[in-house]
Image (cartoon, rainbow, N blue to C red; front, top):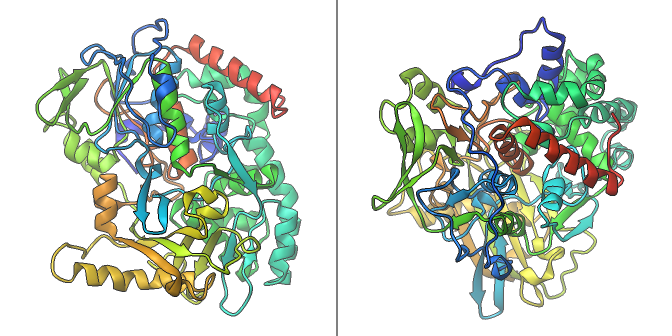
Length: 600
């Protein structure tokens, strides 16, 4: 679902449209945007002014690695090419790439730090300082060029590559009480052996499916994310460089754009235990089970993990990802203003021409990009009457995922050796209940396993979280007691990994859906849009000329790689095709140097 002006499919009679429709459903390589926006209805695409020489900020070298500080040399507030509302992963990716293209960019962020759900925070205790991630915990492809995550190529291009710790397995899935957890290896051949401990029949069916999964991933990876854009010119890019790769998707046309349950049938995975594992994998990817997760996403993620053979954790935590993007914005002449709240998008004669800040100041630009959610953009940022009532109703009616309960802990690690069990765990509290029952699946990240500096010596930092409905939460009498009661399930999950965890706690912070809503400024504290396949996420365009959206409520979907990809797509759309071709030449050169270039 989503507003109609940003949802257009290629005609099914067109062979190119069929290929685009298949590819468009792949969250990791994002070609779903091709069918959603290659012939966008509604407002015409607004071009930013022609590329100028990049501005260099003298303060770039002084940007702190742990928290981004706005540069001293700032772009004029009434003379920007693009104003971006919010500095989440989608907004910062768009800003960094647009600044690389030579555009004059201003990013406006309400929070005291950049990063959105990927920012970090610190707490001091008598034991020392603990550092925590607020959101994403599971990462892959941050430094290896791949089709799943565009950040590896983009950060290399921007001169801000990450330093990471590589490891395998991704984590341990505690799927049955009383049994050792499933070690979720990246290599599918190793995963088959793990599955055999739980279901010999399921293991054999997975083993037989592996060649096809690898073949599908090979075809899906033929179109790199940086090649995508949200106007008709995407066809020029695809036809000139990627049609041969795209044609390999033909045999899988009936299943890839549809729910994963159809792909499981296609792969002859019928074993109930294996199908429940697929439900869990889908839920972790998209917030919905296999009946609602698009099949191409499932195939791409399984295939990408098999291709990469390992997972990664950024040194310094997830905030280092957005710190790197912020530095790229700064050194190419962009400006990031923290603690700057946008009250409203300014719309004149049907076009976005800037924003009005809290306090009345205006920042004008011919293009405005909103990294706020679809509900916050249409419900709070647009002036009355700026779009049709239907467009607003469609946007506000976009289905959304539940919010979260968070548990951040600092613990005493005396006598505790986690080297053999790892730092990532997924706990299914009751295997007899549906995966998507709130609180049934708990995610645990012990980041200090890979980055010891995130906790004082002899201690660990823990982030445990699970889905929680927003409805019924309100501050006042009983609020703190309810938080403790609802966090109990997270403690129960943690006890599957560290049985005496309660005795080890030296720092406890509990976050509710209201906490998530407050700090993330997100509609009902939601994880993101819950658009079920075969419905498509909307593209970046809106019914207002010059207003675009990025983030996890537009294509390609939820999750850090998808949010970053939405920024890449929007930035490419706002420049000419010749500039885009030059970008892809540079990306190809990076891939060739790394030995990761896909022949086409």
